[in-house]
View 1 (cartoon, rainbow, N blue to C red):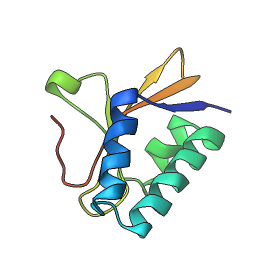
View 2 (view 1 turned 30 degrees about the vertical axis):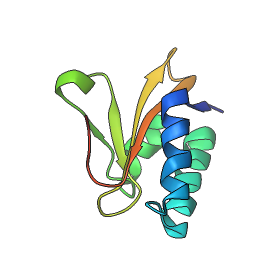
View 3 (view 1 turned 90 degrees about the vertical axis):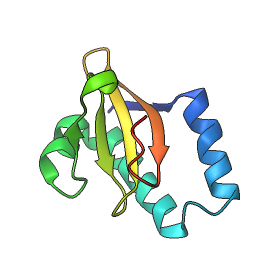
Length: 98
């Protein structure tokens, strides 16, 4: 099993997105499903399954990856400590990788 952690900034951002209704009920279900699959099956599964449209990022986010939870929503994360800890650094509803 893997440990999925949200950074404090990401957690605060997620709370704001929930309160402002930027994230739909479907988005929240998909995010929970991604966390569950990442916890149980790990990053290699998320990369390979195709459902999450997982891909490497470039530039300032070179060591990070993004998985899609909707047509434009992304979970930006990095794998830490030999794939034991997954840090979600940002959840965005509109392809914002900044």
